[in-house]
Image (cartoon, rainbow, N blue to C red; front, top):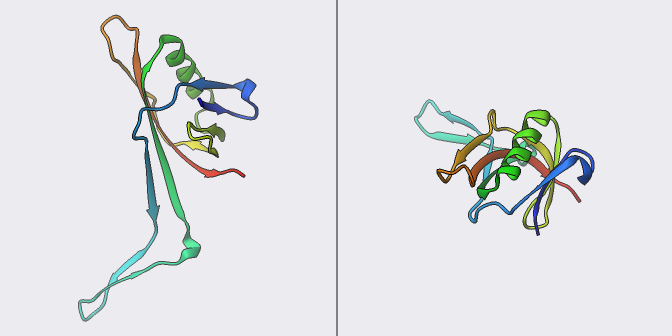
Length: 125
């Protein structure tokens, strides 16, 4: 299984190796917090408010070509809705929330790179 990112069809996207083990999924929920006049803390939450799931993907040991493909795709499509088929086979529609792509050189000869992106999306059936 590979990690795919594309706009409409796989022909306008990129294929990357699987992210490093331990990719992160953060869940954020909304609540209103208030203190009563008596000093008691109250939190109000509704299931209608939804939960935001943020995915953080980290890649290590990207080749120069994979790094270039990711940089080009990110530069051309930042802010656009993308479709991701992740390394688990799950499919997501959403956007990158990373302002700038963080690319790091892992070896002195510029042969391997690491990258990290954050993504917010919804699962697709």
